[in-house]
Image (cartoon, rainbow, N blue to C red; front, side):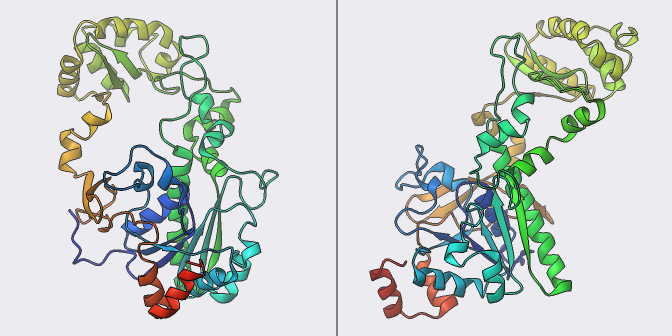
Length: 407
């Protein structure tokens, strides 16, 4: 559900999005869902790299599913910023924008006069968000940053996957580009804070976001496990370092997860498994004891789970309030009653394909999902509209820019 009659929280905010691939576009899409007018500035002829990262492609187009995942709600304008005339067009757009979002290498935009120090003279209220691999000041600032590399350097791959001494063991990245996505989310939060601050200070700011910083920042309890104990955490597969039992178990027909969060839940779980003596065993009487003795507890639980299929255990555990769940493939995810009831698949009209399926923004205001109501744009789809609307260029002026290869 998306009620367009209710003003969205960022209505009236203009964002100039010079970013590409994932972290920056993810941030821009979130701002667009919240109501900002996000103008995606792309290279003429090629555009965002991810447009070409297929298959799969949206039927009837050459738009990749990857590109579609991060660009809902934006308008696309093509400008060649390598040319002085293109730089001037962007500066004119900046003068009317609240936020600029970019993920070029450090100092990569300075040669075009599009860095923060140059543009804040054009617009002192500009909020300029830079996303890089390692930030503006770092021994690694000159390096390019890619999610896979950042997951490795930032430690998450040392925590993900089976231990080295088990079949299939070794470091493992996450199934989606979480360093990029988390950075996009942090960047959007920072931009919202900067917009709020600007209401009091009347001045803009430069936000410096680094994928590496974010990856370290979201190590969460695992980082504190190390900083507190000085013991390097090891990969535990689907097990949890601080809670037991909290992992995947094989059943008679597949696998499921069990997420026991306290001693009461453990007692109820053992009753369901017909292992009522376990909670009274000194080795398992508390979570701390269970963590210390997991190698004795888990095989016993695993043997019990093999007695019945997944559906049996999920129903029995739910009946007594013990958290558990299936391990769904994506077809099952989008067929799940919760996912359907919450309308987490969004379908929008598309000018070439007829329609496009997207994943809904999970944020809701007053029971209304914050989803932009326009699909990811075609390359340069809104160039004429934006140049006419924001810069008051006429058709002849736009035609000349087109002929010169500037747009």
